[in-house]
Image (cartoon, rainbow, N blue to C red; front, side, top):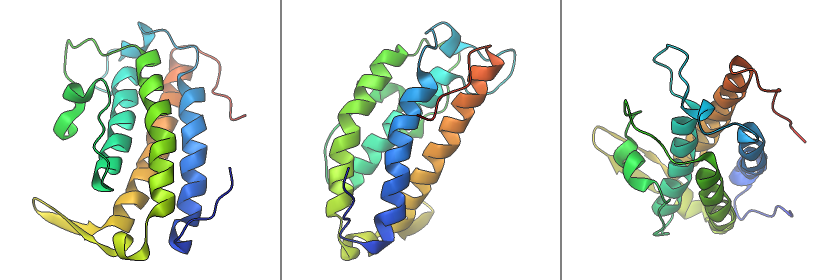
Length: 164
């Protein structure tokens, strides 16, 4: 993909966005839906929740940038809901499908984002920050969550995730 973002500030984030887009698919590759719900007697978020949360946040960022789209499992993650005990989350294939749907749409919107839009201050209860910081945080969080899934792969005796 050619990268010509309107904003020079977004260049590195677009590169990371593209990496995260493919790394997520690699991270969940081959994991059974049963294993995706394993927590190994811990309070840690399982792969299914982490995956759905990642997808939800891409859709939420798209919403902040003016797109009105929702993932299939939106209600399970609406308002940044944490993991729900005894909930069976959708299949990883469903999250993958929603990820593959939103990723090119959001990427295009990010590529069209202006300096003015990046400087717009977002207001949330008890906090505010510019859109650029939101995009930066989301990009960082995606990499962090993909790393968590990669660790779960090894804990569940799957091969390490592939980066190519």
